[in-house]
Image (cartoon, rainbow over all chains, first blue to last red; front, top):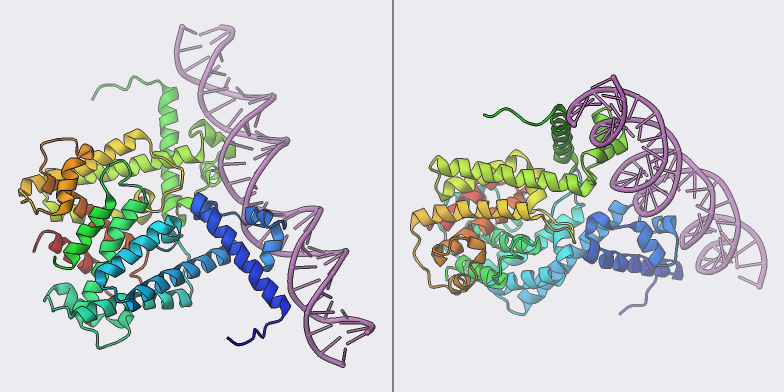
Amino acid sequence: MGADVTGPRERYRAQVRAEIKQRAWEQLATTGVSALSLKAIAEQLGMSGPALYRYFASRDELITALIRDAYRSLADALRTAADAGADVAGLAHTVRAWALDDPQRYLLIWGTPVPGYHAPDDTTAISAEIMATVVDAYRRRDVQPSGRRIEAHLDDHRGWAGDPTVPAAALRQALAFWTRVHGVLSLELAGHFADMGFDPALLFDDEIDDLLGR
Amino acid sequence: MGADVTGPRERYRAQVRAEIKQRAWEQLATTGVSALSLKAIAEQLGMSGPALYRYFASRDELITALIRDAYRSLADALRTAADAGADVAGLAHTVRAWALDDPQRYLLIWGTPVPGYHAPDDTTAISAEIMATVVDAYRRRDVQPSGRRIEAHLDDHRGWAGDPTVPAAALRQALAFWTRVHGVLSLELAGHFADMGFDPALLFDDEIDDLLGR
DNA sequence: TCGCATGAGTTAGACCCTATAACTTCAGGG
DNA sequence: CCCTGAAGTTATAGGGTCTAACTCATGCGA
């Protein structure tokens, strides 16, 4: 690895920013994003209130950084799994494990959005990378056209897919992958299965099996 | 209908409570629950700040009342549809229409939960009523056992279903109904399809068709 | 090596919010 | 008809975000 060309000023700055995010994740895991407090983080770091604004211009900017890191984390997890040969079911389980590992991190991305907030461009780029990983997995499966309405419709609206050679059937399957995965996970992580007694993992597996035509 | 036995005191009180909730829903629709402000509501009603606490003991209690009303509203919509002869697909479209009618109301129930918050018992009762409506619709369809693992598992964990004569296959289908419906709706309402260009309604219909084995 | 520009941190304070306490006012019900 | 209690008020404590104005020290260019 090449020597770091940044001076001590910037190195210190990057380290403090990382420490702030670390504390933010700890708070998030226990209190949720709505109760995330810059003041509390600052005091944990031994500095007082406004000092934090040297590192993040606002609460929104800190949260945006966390969202970006969350997307990056999921993209890496999926990429790693895919590179290790995971098929569609393997990717689904990767997503579930990633979500259960830190439910608030999952909810930060896929939970209730704040009206008016718009994600920055680079997170949508990572989001596209995530989608591409799933689409690729379906491509390798050589999915057959289904003749369904949605498939023709997606053929006409494939801008989000990047590569124009992807079969529309793969696009449909990739979308279904996400709706199925989130269907179980969003209910599970929001606690709606909590008092029902059954094991959500079995429900998840069942949905994935169905998705694969098994 | 019998004459109202409540005096003017209680009648006025009920009316003010209703007015507060009305304003709360308006705020919610535009700002989301995290920015719901009791002070702002009070000022809209021409009273100042603390007066609101005569009617709701805390912000949480107001939100709880809103959650209860949201559950009630969905339960009524589904019951009405079922009484009018709607099948499973009809119920699914009822849920979607209800969700799109006020996305923040949907998210209030199925969006990110506040860690530590626990819904009061009567909302879980309404929730059970909602589930029962869907289970009944599947019962009328006479669903066949699938032999899947989850089905046997649900047979052993059917406490949430009330009626012990419901076939396990219907329980499985009813759960799948909700995971499918929420899978599309949670992504759609959180805006994740916003820049993709396709019509989420077609994706929703496709998932429901698949759910019905079509 | 020296000096200073710049960045890190401070306190004070404006402004938002929830919530409680202590008070006044008024009207419904015994 | 009176008086109790409910409805509303202001004051205040305490928490939060964020800006402004300041001090201090350090790393960088000359």
